[in-house]
Image (cartoon, rainbow, N blue to C red; front, side, top):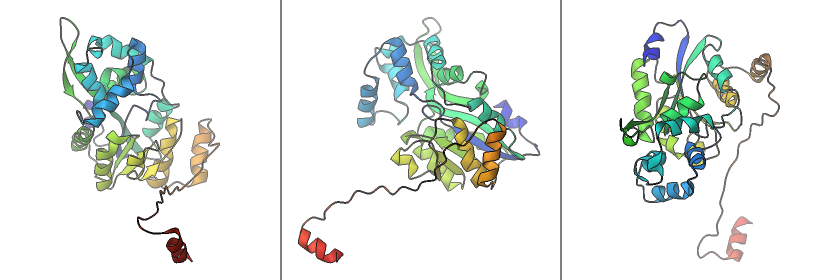
Length: 282
């Protein structure tokens, strides 16, 4: 947490930007990559089973499997590090991290908070995001066997809110200077919390549970895309200025479609005949 205290007294307008990892900064779930690497089948079915019976906090299923499932009990720390090296990341995370350090006098302290194992995230983002800015699921290992002995923390569901509040207690920022980026159901609690504080929430998937909550939704294979709502909603930049920033770094906003979508399901009301319904419409 040393970096948090170092930010004190900065002349920049300070913001806190927190991003999820799996399918937010990457394309695949860490559990899928780990399972494929070790030749363990049925990962999705096991996760679905845990979700159906609400055995664990949503997002913490992989941690549960690593601690309790016989096939996953053979996973060691080195396996998690190797899985991280195999994660396919979205484009331009390094550039995003660099630009966030100074955007027209605004500085966004960039942290990754995820239920994915901490070793996986640190390995995947090595040289891009400092390890002390990464908060994932942390395990305690048996010193003699290397086996996962217990779970120290799981930043899933409401656990992400706890981590965010810990950050906020150490950073000299107001409630509204928080940006959260996520992709799935495990981000619902923290997005609602950030919205309540008048912060900015950005969804990077079409998951219906968070697109209805997030203030902005951005769909792209490039991590730099999340800058657009930040530049528009916080810095107040217009479209030409945003395009100029991307072009200054050798990038073109080739397709930028601003679409509002209403998703409807219309069903016939019970006990109403077609004739009656038609008459009412006329």
